[in-house]
Image 1 (tube, rainbow, N blue to C red):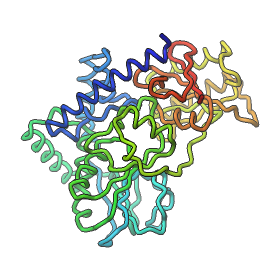
Image 2: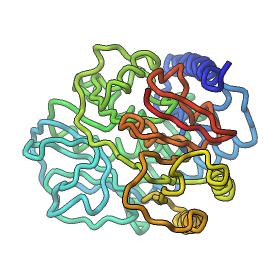
Image 3: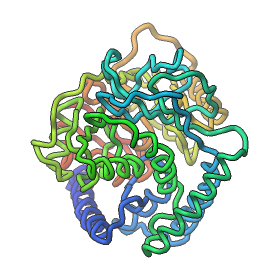
Image 4: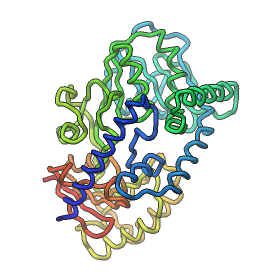
Length: 412
């Protein structure tokens, strides 16, 4: 049995086990929980817990990750919600999205990174700020949830919300499932915004859907109000188990490519009727790049694997690739150092024409996007089950293992 066939068999078994587990939790009325958010692209508690389903259980690591994410609650106590002085009573859409400070000008959203809505529409945006700081200015239709640089009255108010959150989960007997930075972030965001949302009306809710706890909490409450929820899914990870259909998934999905839709219908318990229309989205063409992820656990290992590909001449035009550092990484100095080492290895050559190949590290949406675009994608992975593509799930993709921890993909 080939590597891809073995991998597909394991992934299907794990998916079946996990969905069965998630349904049991939801029957106990547990919704806002990292146990229901099987992350595959970031080394957090959810990813470590997912490994329980394929025999890589490590109690010590689980306890450490769980404790870390409980302590991280402290880091979000200084979040606050900025809102306009006046809001309309009626909007066409309520849009839940992310922003950076350069996306706003004169109180309006000028760069819509995720939703691509009509700027002429009367929409209300709830924006999660990705930057470390935010300058509050006059806003017309934007609610901005962001970190405050100082401890102030808002921090104290958030602390009391935390006490309330813990008390509620304790009374319901669900604290072990919900005492986590992701769950409290969802609770905090919802509590901060619900008073404002009660004063406004809108026809539908639009979001770039990732199955995150805060998204599911909002959807759960909007469904109670009979408000239509729409999730945009532009691309996703090689093993997108986090997008399994559940009671708190969007009513309808806008999708960027049939490859994505077919995968969700065949493997993630969605129905054809759940998909509304194709979403016009410009895919990130990263040909000619070595795409560094948000975080890397072992930089020396990554460099040695890249050097091995180069030395063995396994991929044509591999030395023409240039490094793209992750724009939001907290490890920028390490990534710059890695970029310089790779530049020295490739002798810093510059080429006019970029080859239609790229290298991605770990589980990233870059892989699927660039396969759709017709590029060859080399992947360096650590855990093949949660990070890699298999024929079983992606029949339109060719999979070839170069050596341990390195795979190359292309579209059939």
